[in-house]
Image (cartoon, rainbow, N blue to C red):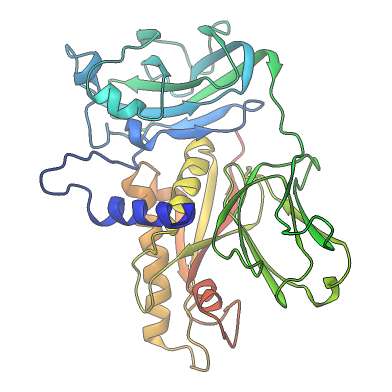
Length: 394
């Protein structure tokens, strides 16, 4: 079984069977729960987060701070990729009192270990109060190594959906991604197609999650910056990327001109960021339904993290259907809007303010493939796209 298949199977279990008989499985996508911790990927800019107004599905205080009850919190997952000193500072922008709890994760089961009561914070402050727009020095700080992972819980005793800002500073050797070529040719003397994954703004290599169709290893999940395949490809090469910190990417490339010679394909990924007016695709659905396909779960979580860390962003959620050769009618229109509303509900249920989201259904007016001939083309038509429509000035 490929890694992608394993991911899909896990997503099915999570989405359909959150609590199997005889098996205790806690899972939550809420940013107020450890399991839904927001992945911080940009340490050069501040994280601007809005408290969700509740404590999610689980009161994590009972595991490490039992004398109090959790009221309103947000969790951040931090992986600084640094050997040196990591510092952060928390500001309140609404005169909201807050406390913080910083944990070091020793393995990939941190939230489960927290639930067992075997983990305690390495830095914490139960209550802090700053006037609006103020903060202290860069404190606390921790000495970190390249692979260290931390979880930061920020808590307030108010149910108000106040805003906070977290600023970071990395002092020491910051690990950067370098280009590494992975050669998948059977014969190293074959003509090749090289696929390079780069940041669209900086041109730097990106360690991306990539799925290729058309290379005789279809649907396998690849991780890396540069790939080499034999030039004897199918007529079309379908490339899909779902990489943390970047907009989802999908493209079909004709390979007829690449046969029997060396050639190169450059994939430029656009980094998620405020003010970008790009569509976020690949939130896909079952046929004739507003039920998410399992592969949509990582995309939904990625979108939620982006919105959680950029609380000034507003979005328009655009629903689409696959209905070739059919006139756009009320049923098709309603299905497309229902799909958009399903995305809004997922985000709202997990801590994103509903006032930041509008929905619109386009029916089959904007299908990516007017006459789809392959299942993946039909899937691409059954989608929701996310458009950044506003950035409030602050």
